[in-house]
Image 1 (tube, rainbow, N blue to C red):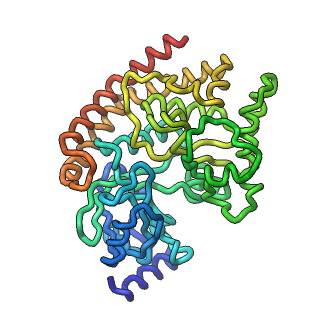
Image 2 (image 1 turned 180 degrees about the vertical axis):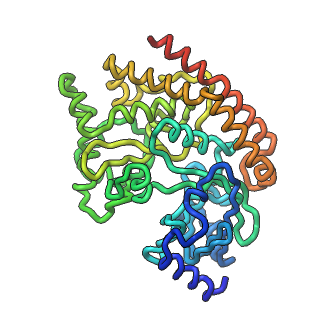
Image 3 (image 1 turned 45 degrees about the horizontal axis):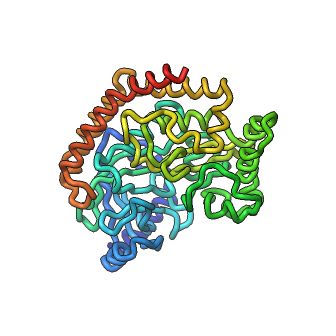
Length: 395
């Protein structure tokens, strides 16, 4: 890596507008293209990254896509259950070392390693369904990742949840957004009034320098109201701090795709961001990390809902229960219409199969991959009718 060349790219990335580049972020996140992403790093740093994969240490590098490069990017290992030292999950930040540096207008990207998904498609399919149903979700595409010209395997290029995401999806770059961190089983109970109870559970991704009270007070109030025993004012109290309809749609999508590790996860709530608009206290959910979706085609659309304090009480209201049933119907219609979900599975599988078979770092065999694709195709074909039958039975 030549220092002068890297410096030149950095200057261009800072000084030139996004339109100067022939490519755009929309093209980077085009899910119909198998992209090539190339990272270049010092050999010693790369060795350390592999050996110390449990740490969040950043290392400098250069990223290239379609002949456009950006230098002095920051690269670190990432992930929770998917984190490993063989096929690294990576976070790439463009502005950590050079303030204000952007690549295609982005502050960073996530390179998801598909470590827990033998079919390598579950996450991107789920996010596509969220978007099809008008819900906020990160954009995703597929890439072959090369590090120092060595093939690492098939990855997802994932849009980060930050102020730029808020600007694109909500038109609200000044909003508040928090990444939820699983610390222990959490089912929507009240953690208490102390700010410290929320600081590790909800990590701010915007407004990090504001006072903890300003940042966390609406979150504390949400769980306080959700756990009050007063029935007559409970719903109004929750509604002040939570977009109830958006929550129900979010959960309906997760239940439709038989998500194992989401809001109604097997170990409590997990894998979401919490968004609060800059002009209100009513918060919404944003999905994240869906490698554990599409688990069981026969799964109940009400699985583990009663375990969650907020959902259990919300669905106790007849009108909200009916609204939830209508949202399940909308999921089934969106998936079955023009065989949309079946076609998405087929087209995405065709796009990545040769590269996936050549991916020797993945945690599953090629036979596992092929079986995983077949299971997704079966799920896409059969799940809508199964959920519609469950809705009819629930009524």
